[in-house]
Length: 542
Image (cartoon, one colour):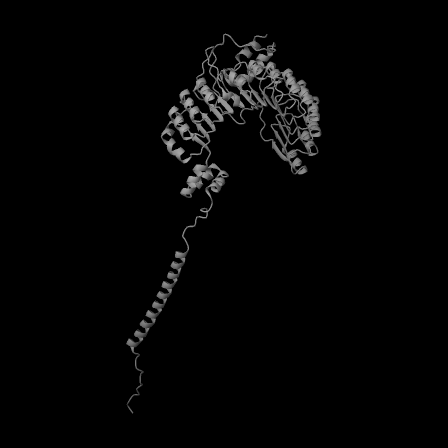
């Protein structure tokens, strides 16, 4: 009885046996994962080995096709494409035909490497600002050796180039067709060296040429031009102190089609008389801020093929000269007249244009004050008129604009600037001018923005451009030079005295009030008057 009951405890599990089975299961699991990992990576490695890491999809494109693609890209995109591969860099350099360089003096040692890459350049522009030293003759000669196929060359501000460099350039680049220079110092001898050698030259543009001798000892330009004079088709002279030295070249160019004389000093009537002969080929003439009168315009009337004429701020031109041009130049298509608000070209000249210029397609009137009679005649007779610009006129109001909307059926583009026009006149285009594509109204203080919205709603396809926010009272300046702004400020040499001013064979202004008017007009020149002879006659007329 005193014995306590005892229980039989189960034997403890064998520890060594449990640990052994766990180690076996872990090792087997690890080995299975290792096998799977190694199999996966071996499979990936086999896939990577079979597929190339980089594929050049353009390798099958011929170089010619790749170069053609580059021609459709902008300059910045072409530069970025050169970073793709060495082949693209090579093809882009060989296919680039147009190049513009900053022609400062440090360019000289880099010329061989630049033109080793761009070895197909045919159009080259060298520019240097006037505060830097430009390349000289050595650099120009080296470039001409590297670019024997050069057809177009533009020099801007290369003041270190002399006539020696120009002579070598002409010898190495005999296929040059277009040459343009501005603010250069190689003078008359440099131009003559170019003209005597480049027999294929077709276009010549000269702006602010320095180092030109004045007086009777001055060497004429183009007197011995040879074959270059016979091939020239376009001559542009801009801001020259004595541009009359180009007279022999202009008169000797029998195939000359375009003549642009822009802001050049001296009397140009005599030259126009010599140029405008019966057998001339002139098609386009630009006269801007010149000392030219009705004598010169009457001479241009001898050009039967004349199609484009710009008369911009030539204060001595009157209705007489415009009448002569309109009567004899039957093929006139584009006419720009900037009367400078002198009222010397007005209704009489416009009526002659309406009567004789039936092929007129573009008419620009700036600072001219026509009335409804002359505008109605132009709108009625010039049935091919497609582009019309009326700027700075004090007489063009709602009545005249309504007449244009009613009569100009073929009109496609219209510009009205600085005229006393109101919303009533603009509303007339909701029904008139069925072919009108674009209308532009600027600096007309009586025109509001509401009429623009209303006109767009009425004619959804019409582009309406209204500038009604800012109205300026300054005179309208419509200089027609080179299709763009000036590169820098005009620098005419100061005129101290002119003991023998050239005579002008035209009707002088004998009223003293003209002197005060033109003194106001030329105030922007700050004492550098480009027409000293003209003003001396006008001021002494009283």
